[in-house]
Image (tube, rainbow, N blue to C red; front, top):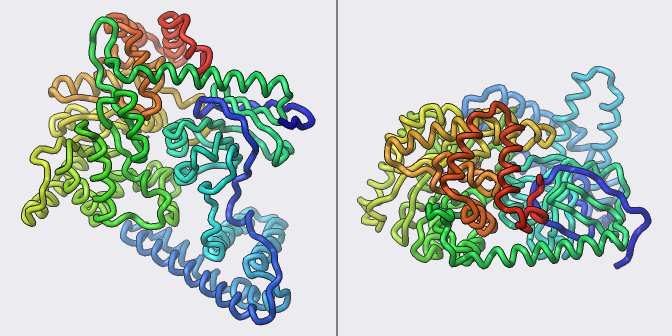
Length: 593
Ligand code: PEP
Ligand code: MG
């Protein structure tokens, strides 16, 4: 391995554990990828036509966004987009660009970008911040037009070179979903929280990820080596020979350790005093089901249906969904699967969907989106119901915040079932229906929801976000995003006790379920079912087998008496170390210990 000049260590936040050694790959925005080339006189006409088509498509996008906003009664947004349509008629964006293509004989995307840069300079020089801010609208329009001009060149992680460490300002769930394991070995970003959907997808794929790294300040050779230590959040640029050897050795040990843990497939998920736990998997893609079977998972506790479609431009049709859900159900080999309806919005959008809300996590997300877009919802429910004929399916609604929302969703489900039955479509006779508890209002009325559900599932990723009012994707607030906050423990205890009272099962399917330090705490709080990304099944099974229900209950009691997140976290760390003193996992795998 060639070693470059000086070793530099950058400290960021660990998002997904693991160690990677590779070469940097800078993942850029569409406007950063515009090439410059000359065109012949004959091609000028074609180039201008290409530009006009991009403008037309940009206008169509805006109009359809306006329609959506009108349906949602967001009239301010409609007015803003009206202004965008007007800007798009401005000669600066029409005749001026065309003239410049004729004069310079350069490709139109390059010409367009140069013009935009000139405008940016002019706007930057304006003293009045109100007018300076207006450039954001132009930038937005410019990105849209460039996106259409460079369609097919949209930023995409599908075809990056092997052994790439992807450096990006930020990543979306769609970006990480597109990454191929054999090419992308790690992610490094400036921003992004540990439970953002981009991070969850990276974890599901087992790709180490570190955020809060300001890599723009440091020159990184394109073909130089970079080490990503996802356990500690360190990035080592230009590692010395010695550092490289150390990390290669560590990476091998980690692989061996994980390999050993995977042997747990045949073992029961039960504590050493014989208390059984349902340990299932959170799944994004069909390919993860092999791991579920290999690691002896008891089923799928959460299928994030939107994940399979995030890289697409359109929502899938009923038939497309039916084919995919049936495939999932058939590959379960008799195990049960909880299919969650779309959780779109928040930080999850389709490729050409754009957020128009100032606060998307508090906006039209998940079940709210489905209840407004009824035809989309019904098509999804029809596809799920039809797939239910092929195995053991449950349906779960995400981000329910009130009983009336649950009732409305269930009423639509009944209506769809009736329609299908009238057409004599085969459907399973009993399909359990449940909802996620991830909003404090839902947790507080868990008794009401439990009465009308067949099961509950606690989504701690969102429950922490909404209870503590901390954006789960904001890495600047990561110290405040604390699942050990006493309020979270009390809410979990409340939900579990209401579920028990109504005799229905309750699962924890947020990221804490995959953290072995939390395993005894959750069991002690009365949770019998955990659902974690498939690759974490062995680690969590190991943690379950390493504890007793008596010790777990004592730990939970003790934790509930503590009054700060830091004290509870310290207690969990201490217990984890005490219970598994010679556990190699402790040294190699867990980031905080
Ligand atoms: C959660 O919020 O904990 C959860 C499992 O759902 P998601 O991460 O998909 O929002
Ligand atoms: Mg959630």
